[in-house]
Length: 566
Image 1 (tube, helix red, strand yellow):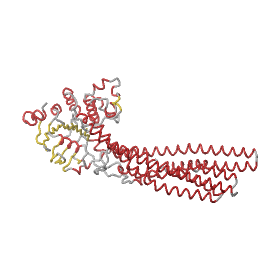
Image 2: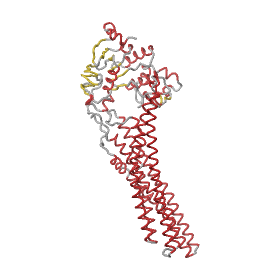
Image 3: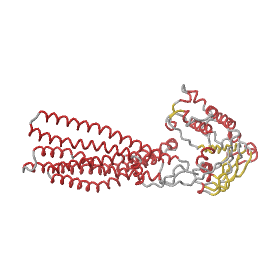
Image 4: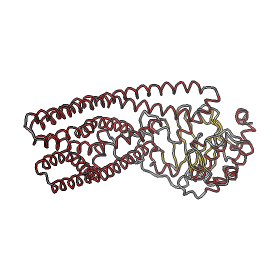
């Protein structure tokens, strides 16, 4: 099987480098524009100092007019450069976040699972929050460079007035960044832990929602909620810890910036008192001392954002660099293929062996639910071929040798608890909008009553997880989706457990008629489905113990009669 991901392994640092490399153009443009913005901001107090100096010296209306025009140019430059610079950077940021969300989702949705110890809720958090925070590096670097530009322009301007002022700004900036870079490491480690705990809480919520009905059924909902509360409390405590660390970081940065600004202001005042700088230079120095706090604040926050982006990139790498559980092949079976299970040993299965010819309808009556679940898992590739003994073949080809596209095209195992998505009846049955059997699938699954109940018909809205449908309606909707796919080999597991006996009889006949000429396996104990099958295989204690038609087995096998008769 050839997987879609040919770019692994990928550590967190590689993810950040990739994000930076493919956004070089946008970052260069954004850096220039944000540099112009910061240069214009820095030029404003410099221009004010020059205006004060020349106005006091020349006392000319013409000089005043030129000064006002110069300020207008600076203000216009600041406004336009900020507007277009942030537009460029945020577009690149949003686009990059989308790319990583798609990559993580692609890995999570591949039919060949990845060998990573993460639940679906954690993968969802990585595909959303971590992807967004990783893409923030696209904005962080240009803003870091533009802030540095502002600090350097201020240092040069102050150094031209008096070298000591310029040296003070440079030395103070280096000292501030040294202190904050040490603190940012704590933020990175705390953030990684917070992200992991929030993801675990999200995974717990997803598990609870999926199992809410059965939990209510046996009274286990309170214990489950207590379990979630513990996980959520851990996430809350870690979030508070991160907030404290961030607060200390922000407070320290603000205090150090204020100390530097005050030092520049006091030094400039002392130099003016000593007569070493003039009034215009004093105005410039005081203005720059006030202004420099903003780029310094931005500059000093960058290490924190870099550490957060790095922590998120490392969490994405857990998914993106994880190898597949199995390495797929590249072969394809012939159309109209059959199914063969040859000596499979896994879980409750002990050397299971049977074959289903092309176009045959076979039912498997599993006496033990665990054996039914294990057989469905093996056929659905939820268990990698190298994790069990024996082989499963489709069209004479081992599943291990088939490509992902071939498995999708020729074999569909409809899960017992098929997921229902928010959308409409139509989009749930035919997500791609390409099925040629949509009306037939609706008719065969007896979903026609649901369609007829609503004015919108197949366009009737469906809530997330089918919350506005009954259990039987959800099961029939899932069955309709499987039938509409019209695959060469279809495996159904207990597709009618939530419907009444009359509806079950109709569904059984309809499915057998619609799937005529197609290979179909139904793992079930339903007498209606067993009766319409060409053959029934009895799976008892992990092996096939009997094989005949349903009616012959009822007449000759007492254990079978007790197991399936209702």
